[in-house]
Length: 93
Image (cartoon, rainbow, N blue to C red):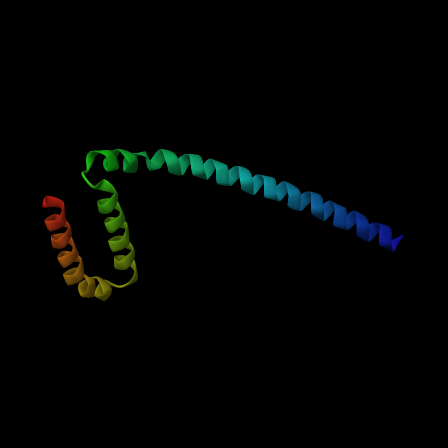
């Protein structure tokens, strides 16, 4: 009898976990739809900017560095400026 009760509890727990997983999947899908709707402007900006992918990638990297440490950005600014000048020189050739 105790074994049967334990099996029933485990089966009930399994059903609960399956339902919870389905709920989480539905929430993730809803969040993906919302995120795509909110980030539509990124695709539009990428189409409008020449070399937009590089600008967006560079901006994202700079933002991540800014969040981590401001001093890190100060160290990377000369290298970033030199890379930007090199890119402009390469682009005009």
